[in-house]
Length: 395
View 1 (cartoon, rainbow, N blue to C red):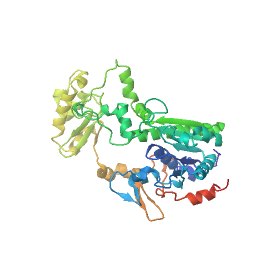
View 2: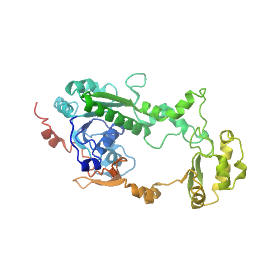
View 3: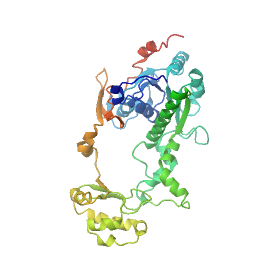
View 4: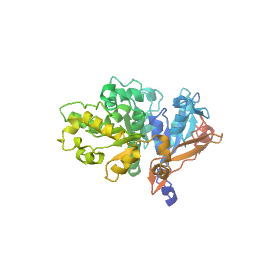
């Protein structure tokens, strides 16, 4: 990584990684998400894709909406990148990718164990070409062990991680998260590792191979509850049978129906809540009752909250500094002043008329949030220009 002088405008526009070149050889979510976040921080990202269909995520649909021939998911996770098409069965294309590696700062890949080695583009091969490379690998379950060749898919990783037993009510069985948490958490972990490796590289010139897996990310996600489990005699948490929101936390922690909406209540002493809800029966109980009588107490609270609208309860609870919030859906979130002030949405476009509304980086630098203008690329859209720029057709 060569040191460059950043202007105040660059820093203010969150281009902290200006001058860093990232090769995104990954597909689906975890790796491309890592590359997206590095792009949001100012890095230049070249997405390496197969010419015959590209990233399989292009055809992974969350709904029947398609924009410019690709899924909305692909657009969300690959905005602002350049696309270089390469057939890994073609020795000339592999040689071109190797020449790109020689010029890159970061490589990201999430092939199944063994595949990248067969292509001759693994960390050892990349480091032989570019000793200072920061090489990032994401797998489903690591490089060894009986699960290493299992599909590294989010739902399957959640199933193996134990996390499904923390969601839903006690009688529901295992309940998955409604988001691809394994992919996104693994991607975030890789971003942290890449940034740390780039800091060391700037000081020493030494590269690194940083790795994680979907399973490791999910285990880390549970570090609080797993630490409790391992130091609590191996007792498993018991989810509430009524409005469970956390398998370990006591009443009133949960989400409750009001007459016109839903109210989330966080942890607080019952004695404090009782007078505000006019529920003397829940006051004066021993502290342990919030755990041992969790479900019955939550039912009492739920019955009381259900008779009045959300505005009534917020007008009582918020001035008393009770930790609570209305449960918003997306239209309500978008209409809220708190969300509008964050300015988290943007429109990205492409020269073929594609225009898509999407989110922006969650990171602000010196008060500024970087705005991206370019939509996700077509397959191989920038191949010709990149070959010329990097001299890839020259042996």
